[in-house]
Image (cartoon, rainbow, N blue to C red):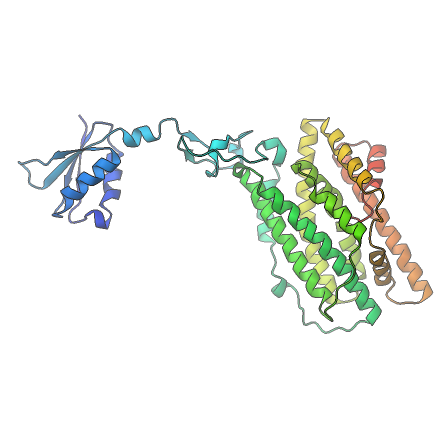
Length: 399
């Protein structure tokens, strides 16, 4: 028989005695005995109640040694409680499992999961559906590069623009807010459907949603910096964004939003950085660009891994582009007010020669967007000619 001794001195159950008892009993096998010494008068009464609750047997103390107030015989309850328990994979990304079971629920990855808990079902519970080996690195990068809209932007920088140039900035900011609101809703929706076992993806989506919320804030603040009224919102533009919100599949939503839409927005933000008529506009589009580049990187990495594992997956991507194109075939595409505003910003003034230059710059922007989409599709394994055809089917609303 295995025997241990514990002297609680004057520490009773009102001062943490149960922790010391559990620690000592954990070192005993089932049936082992623990001699408990204590000077607390109420010890035996409290110990009896605790043993009943914990599933241990309580025996009288040793008459030959008055300090041994009681013996505790370790029961099976604590041992049996963890029978059938299993590890929820490993704590690091190397410990991921291909499909975590529903009964792991919200348990931390790597935890010892007690059997009998409730099953919590998540729509995206397969590794290949959501994972990218780049996710942990991108999450750490995202956290390190968060920025404060108040501290990172000098909103009090003095500048004055001609009224029509300022109106163009307001129109573009209005358009950016509309698109960034869609880009906020999508990762937020996806986040709630990902199994917590893939926590780095959840964390990355959470930061992505925070990025977009911050973009909405700074674009709105710039739009109203010199006045209260925003620009226009077209029916066609909103219809285009609604097709993104309607995509239920994780990979396809990531493809349409991050790889194609936000990929094109990288070109747009670079364009605005180049032609920004004031330092505040230039600063906020540069900050947004660094965030959007990270979103695009995750989308590409995730889809590249899927395409390598299943070459037929490219057919699914092709179908998503074609369905969205067909759904938007009768819409007007990008708000004409936005195209005009971009032209004015690139022109910088209202002379015929300047407007012609601005118009050419916007045409070049759209060509660069098309080429960027083509290149990203090639990275996903599409032949160059097919990639060019599919890139041309992307919505005229840019996002």
